[in-house]
Every structure is written in structure tokens, then in C-alpha cells.
Length: 166
Ligand code: HEC
Ligand code: HEC
Image (cartoon, rainbow, N blue to C red; front, side):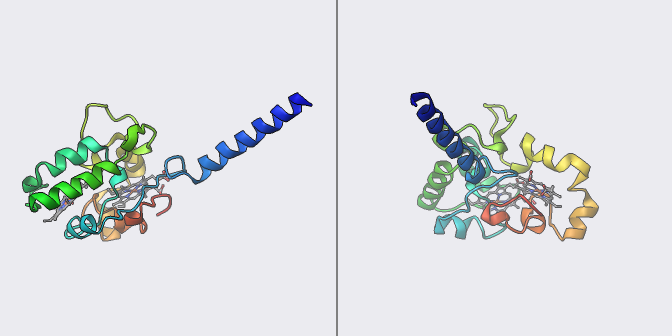
């Protein structure tokens, strides 16, 4: 009887793990990241392009980016110090590696010391898009994408952090 009880408990545990794997943003097939909830970040970081979910880059990348908004991919995206600090804090707190998490798919094969400023420079992103040349110039044009950074043109749910289907 005792063995049975343990077995049942283990089964229940296994079920819980499976359920978590199926619903967790991190373990889901494809990639899911929480959409940006912070109003200030949405406003300021959505002024020129889609609002990139914070979970698509590690904290060290956001820190580097927020430390040099004057030179933001050829644009000056600088903000007042207070706003910069608040947005940086939000992005870092919700980054791919927030809370010491290391399982985010977007961080796969990314050197622990590397702080890419682009999601499109991460090994995971490259691997997903190099396959069948998914971001070839002709494809970008057909999709009406400004560049490969224009996730929303191909992934309708990009701002909501959904990239499972296109
Ligand atoms: C020109 C179209 C295009 C653009 C732009 C684009 N993608 Fe994709 N992406 C694709 C296609 C096609 C696939 C493969 C089909 C799929 O798995 O949904 C894909 C796959 C992915 C996957 C893997 C999904 C999975 O199920 O394994 C992720 C994550 C992803 N893209 C994120 C992004 C992000 C983030 C951006 C913007 C920085 C972006 N993509 C820009 C076309 C695009
Ligand atoms: C003044 C316009 C402007 C503002 C404001 C702005 N950006 Fe950008 N951002 C750009 C441009 C231009 C690019 C390069 C896009 C391209 O290559 O097509 C870019 C690219 C990015 C990328 C890289 C996307 C990729 O993977 O290729 C990230 C991440 C990003 N911005 C985050 C932010 C954040 C966070 C904020 C708010 C603090 C912000 N941006 C505000 C203009 C802006």
C-alpha cells in the first residue's frame, strides 16, 4: 500500500510537471514572452517600432541599450534621466534571464558575456530565421516588413510575445 501511495504521488507530481511544461511561457513550443505591461515603456519604446517584449533579451543587453539611447541604431532615442531609469528597471526586471532564469529559449547558445543589442543577433533568432532564408529581402518585401527587426509584419502576435505561428 505504501508503495502504491508513493507511486500515485509521483504520478501526480509528474502530471504537475507536464502541465507546467505545456503552459509555461518559457517551456512552450516556439517562444512566448510576456507583453510589456508598463505604460511608460509601451509609450516611449513603441514610438518608432513595435514594443519588443522585455523577455527577448537578457538584462545585460537592456542595461547596455538603456545606457546609450543617444546612439540607438542611428537614432537618438534619449529620454529624461527619470524615464530612462524607470524603463531600464522595468526591462531588466522582466528580461529573459530575470531572477537568474537560464532556460529562456532566446538565450540558447548565447555567450554568457555577450550583450547583443539586437534580438536579431541572438544565435536562437538567427537559427530560426536562417532556415529556408526566412528573412530574405524578397520575403521582407512581400510581408511589408521594414527590416528583419519588424517582427510584427510576420508574427501578428509579436507585441503580445507570441511567435509560435506566423
Ligand atoms: C520576414 C518575416 C519574419 C520576420 C520579420 C521575423 N520573423 Fe520570426 N519567423 C518567421 C518565420 C517564417 C518563422 C518560422 C515559422 C514559425 O515557426 O513560426 C519564424 C520563426 C520565429 C521563431 C520561432 C518560432 C517557433 O515556433 O519555433 C521566433 C521565436 C521568432 N520567429 C521571433 C521573431 C522575432 C523576435 C522577430 C523580430 C525581431 C522576428 N521573428 C521577425 C518570419 C519572420
Ligand atoms: C526615435 C526612434 C526610436 C525610439 C524612441 C526607440 N527605438 Fe528602438 N530602434 C529604433 C531603430 C531605428 C532601430 C533599428 C531598426 C531596424 O534595424 O530596422 C531600433 C531597434 C531596436 C531594437 C533591436 C531590434 C532587433 O532585434 O533588431 C530593440 C531591442 C529596441 N530598438 C528597443 C528599444 C527600446 C527598449 C526603446 C525605448 C527605450 C526604443 N527601442 C525606442 C528606433 C527607436
